[in-house]
Length: 449
Ligand code: TRP
Image (cartoon, rainbow, N blue to C red):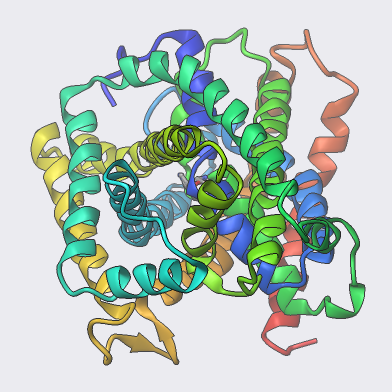
């Protein structure tokens, strides 16, 4: 990242832009749907509060202290160069995420295009079949995914991120408003209350270690935690930025958007008879029904809302993919001494290849499965449930046990001017709570305890 391309306020918006994306609108509802609804959401809140917010603050502390790209930032705060390895893990993770994320973002592009052309109208069966046919096409979704990575590439290379941040000042609130409108519309559908109940009344008999790991992975994925992505952004924060408040506000915004997305999807899904555990296709087979049925009396309104919604979703996804692309591009540029353009091309190429693989694995090519999962599902599992928690675990160990206490205190409290009382609590989370919880969840998942 050219160190001048962000304004000081823009950078907090950029961090929020990285956090808010398909993780909230696409991944959260389908994860909640597969894991029993309310019980999952309850665990998710716990993960955000106990592990997510302290983890965000940790990355902010490292980034602002380092004032440089993530690898050097880890070097600066760590006693030993070995800790760079956490930075490398972060690049690898964010590159894999970008690979499959672009496929889903590509689906959003297709839905934007299709809704503009009015192609998404028909009954529930038609909508499901539309998604099935489109997503298993060997060519179209690949092209959309590459187009999406191309858009990200252009933003990264042209250095127009500042403009994107300014635009998000308007577009992010707009997304929020639109979500609220769609939530209301969705909740007014016949039989919708069943979906609200699913989201709000927990059934803890569904909770297993696996659900816990999924909630943990979802929390980290949604907050962009565990890949040094937040650390990169925090390197642009000013000395006056209140890191604790920033983490709290971004986590709150991110959670509110996820819950709204849930309230948008489940009432409609129950109303039209889409299974809540449909997996990655959930929002794509539910939303077109909402736009049609909820606005049946006012088709023009339904049309405008659907087009706006998909456009805003594409924008939200773009502010997230920029953050993933940036980590790798900065690495190849600043550490491998490639010109920035070439560095961006390396990343774009690798991600495009991965995206094609993920896209084909959905239906066009049968063999692209790993351990019974499609490549897309496998990459999602590998990153969200293993690599992100591992990255956050190592970062916690580094800060809690190896970094200089005074440095942490200075960054956390802005040299003793803020949140003095919270520092010991955070430190306790970073030293004990975060690593122990992640370790326990891992051990339980893999049957050791
Ligand atoms: N948080 C983003 C979302 O919810 C996805 C994302 C962007 C991300 N950057 C990341 C996830 C870095 C993990 C790591 O859509």
